[in-house]
Image (cartoon, rainbow, N blue to C red; front, side):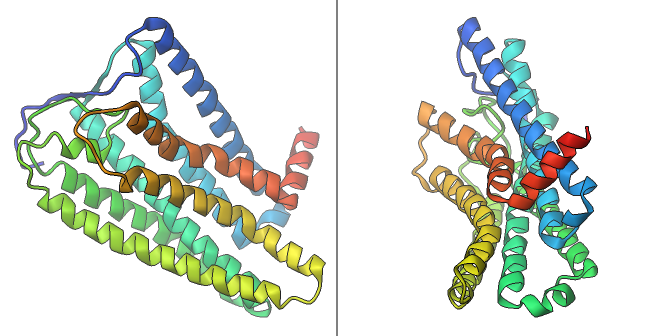
Length: 305
C-alpha cells in the first residue's frame, strides 16, 4: 500500500484471559473445524469418485464445499493458535491476507449459490432443454466467473480497507473484520471503502432478487406438476439449496444490518462466530441429509473403504 501506517501488527479480541477458558475455546473450535473439514471433504470425495454424480448440480456443490473449507481455514486455525499460545497478535500482512482470502471465499460462495439457483430453475422449469443449456462448457464458464467475481470482490474491499492510515492496532473481533478495521482509521473518511460497500450492496441485492425470482418461477412450475411424487422429487432437489442460501443471507444480514457500536460486546462476538463458521459447517450436513443420491453415494464410499 502507498499510505504509510505506524501499525506493524494488530491485536485481536481474546475470548477470555483465563487460561482454562482459552483451552476450552481452542478445543471447541478444533472440534467444529475438524467436523467441517470432514463433512466438506466427504462431499468432495463422494462427488469426485461417483460418476453418477458428475452432473452440474453436484459439480457446483463440490465447488461450494471447497469454498466452505477455504472460508473456515482462513480464520479458525489462527484463532485456535492464538488461544493455544496465549497471544492476541496478527501481523499487518496476515491481517491483509485474512480479509482478502475470507472475502474471496465468502463472495465466491454467495455467487455460486446464485448460479445454483439458476441451475435448479433450468432443471425444473426447462427439463427438456437442461442438458443443452447446462452443458459442460457452460458449467465451466459459470464456475470460472464465480471464482473470478470472488477474487475481484476480495481485492476491491482489501484495497478499500487498507488504503487509509490506522491510529490504533486493537481489533475488537477474533479475526480481522472490515467493520472493526474501519473503526481504527485516524480519520472518519471511508470514501474508498464506502465506494466498495455501495458496489457490494448493489451486486448482493441483484443476486438476491435473481434468486428470489427464480424460486418464484420454480414453485409455480412445481405446482403445475400433476403427481404428488413428482412435486416431492422436484422440491427435494431445491430445498437443500434454498436452506443453505437462506442461512447464508439471514445470518449475514443480522450481523451487518444491526447498528454498530464503538465498544465490543459478546453479542458482536457471537454473531461473528455465527456468520463466519455456521454456514460452512452446516452446508455439508444439509445437503447430505436432504439428498438421497448423496446418502447412497456416501454409503457406497464407506462400504468400498
